[in-house]
Image 1: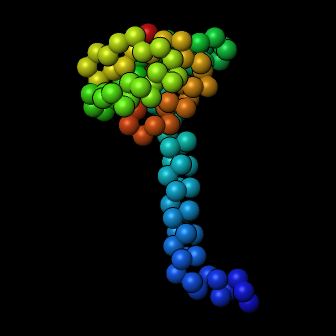
Image 2: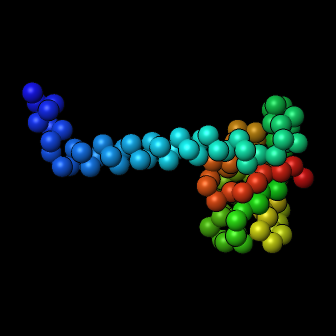
Length: 108
C-alpha cells in the first residue's frame, strides 16, 4: 500500500523517469563506444602496454578537452579536429570512447 502511494507522488515519478533516462543514455554510450575505436587498434588494446592514439572529435578541441585528455595520457599535439595522445592505457582508450563527442580513436 505504501509503495502504491509513493508511486503516485510526482517527485517519485520524476526521479524514476530521470533515472530511466540517465540509465538509457549511459547504456547507449556503452553500446556505441566500441564502434568509435578503429579495428586496427584492437591488437594493441589486447596487450597491457600503453598505446599512442589519435582522437578525432566532431569539432575543434578546446582547452577543456585537452585538459581532460591529459588525465588519460600525454597530449602531444592537436591537428585540426584530432588530438594526439601518447601513453594511454587500453582501459582508458575504452573510457575515452564513451564520450559522446568523440568520433574516432585510431592508432598512430
